Image (cartoon, rainbow, N blue to C red; front, side, top):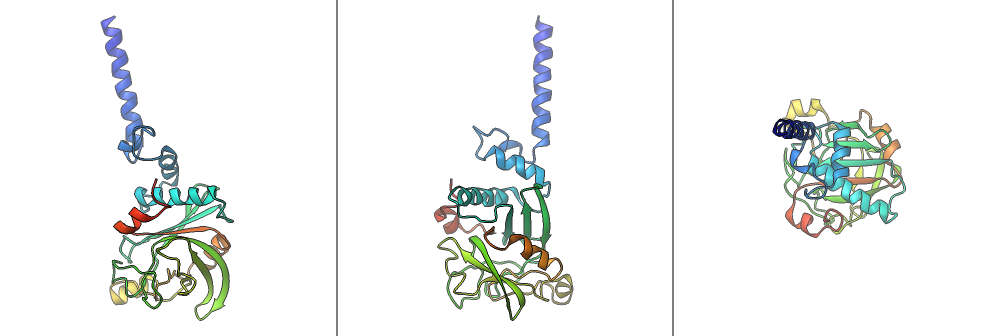
Amino acid sequence: MIKRILLLSALAIVTFSSISWNSPHTELVDPIKGKHNYNSIKLYNLLNDKDLKFEVFEKALLGYNKLLKNKKIQNSKFLTVIDLSLSANENRFFLIDFKSNKIIHKSKVAHGKNSGGEFAKFFSNKIGSYQSSIGFYKTAETYNGKHGLSLRLDGLENSNSNARKRAIVIHSADYVSDLFIKKNGRLGRSLGCPSLPKKGFLNILKNIKNGSVLFIYYPEKNYLKNSLLVSN
């Protein structure tokens, strides 16, 4: 009897260890006792790309689900995440396709010239600030402007409510490239727009235009405390 109990205990330990080992965040496995939503962990595992940090993805998914529940989204297939806590020289633009549960595009993305050099540190919603604005956006219509085909954005929070007035749009730019980094030591900067490389740009706009969610993240304390979309 004692041998049987010891054998069952050993099997239980091995099974639990296997479950924990397969999770990228072992402390998040329990959806009830843990601090995080089990569905976000499951989907994050499916994406299988550690360049997108879990804590950033989780907040993006939380806001996305709230907007979806409130019927604020017209294009629910895609979620775009920009992590401005990373170096501008790294890939920090992530396009998630919920149909395939994959990141179908990732690339570099510029921040505003008054937000910082290689790293963004300062953010503003003010007209003329030339800084990036964090928070959730909804993509709108495309148009042809001085940067060619561009995509208008509407800010959904107090942190980015002036996006349209500030002409904060997604456009492509030559200064968002590895060649520019090689010559200048860092990526180029915009006037506040999340500017993208030219490669793959048209396909990105085709996917995310007309009502998809874009989340620009930075661990700014006031935003994380006051945002209705990232707080539980």
